[in-house]
Length: 234
Image (cartoon, rainbow, N blue to C red; front, side, top):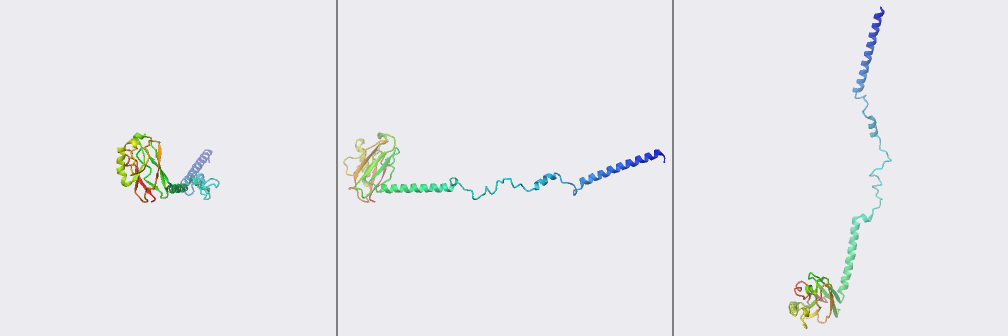
């Protein structure tokens, strides 16, 4: 064979060999890319990390310490406990008030208050049958002067109330708006103004047990509102 032909044949063989190798490399690459079974999963490192168990040293916000039933509870933060305490205090105060009322019921005096709204603080006065004398202490808790909002207290039988109140207006301020030397009047005080006080002590000999008596203020226009019942020995 001529040397020129030999070189040409060898060149063609080498070219064919090179082309064949590239095709096989391309086929291998395509097979690796398109084969879903043999293909490696994307981001396999992240998947492996996600499947790993959580570290045991990290604190869990809902761990046993937070839910520990042995954790003490501050009683000052317990609404029910506060309610019970308040109820206990209220009961104690009620009992104390009851004791004061019982002591007052057996006393031979009473404290009566009148204010600038033409009101007495009591609707009923109870006089024990054991008292031979009884005292009414009157205090004017308002601020208005005697001429504008004067108060007193007058005690009469209930049947005599209307007549004594009318006659007191006729008697006038100089007579404390009370008819003087009138047997219908059991007891009365002077007229007082805001911030002042007075009292009257009277014998209970004229009172009948179970009788119907009235106390009232005889200042003009006051008797309709400022009056109550006085009971003796009932």
